[in-house]
Image 1 (tube, rainbow, N blue to C red):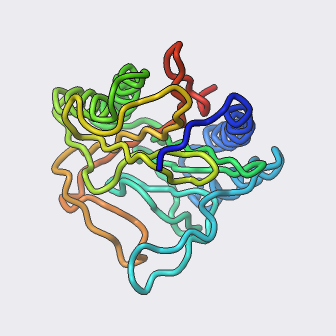
Image 2 (spheres, rainbow, N blue to C red; image 1 turned 60 degrees about the horizontal axis):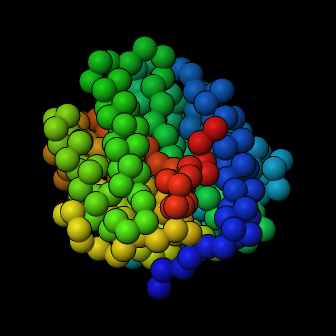
Length: 256
């Protein structure tokens, strides 16, 4: 069921998003060679708590049999890992890496969700393009996030743009509605046909998240039963924000 948020509820989501933005700033300030992904997790969680929020990802059940609930505040996926990478003291960022960070917060019972891919030091031209295309695809997608359009209009815009740039899109995972729960209806795929899917209405809150691959979009689950990586080992990039659809256009809650 798709929920329509009131102005009061959107204000509460904005408060959650403020804590998330503080965590993003803390992460950005610490992206450099020699830093562990576990340290990024620590600075992000500290920023969330300082702003009265809790990490939304902690305790999420593993979707795969035998896996354990998630124990960290953020996901850190390096290079060919596209989503759900686990922070670790053993994963030390080095010059030329790219790291995708996904994070969510709850504050006063309302969620926010965002993700970014960062370059570590000097990165290759291909990685620079991957990061730019993922970000640009998000903005191309939200141009279609207006009342009266359909979810498929967002999906098709993202797909068309990314494929024209010579990259592919992850198909097994998608964006989603968001509110009092991190994942609500509707699903927002990154591929699709115009004029299909639920109709968009003012007050809908969505997390839109293009996940793109340098090569083929075939992925596998690593042995930790969380990390998703590309089969061909090629680079990946990711960009996500929480938005609210309004009669005046999409409002991005998780972007400074």
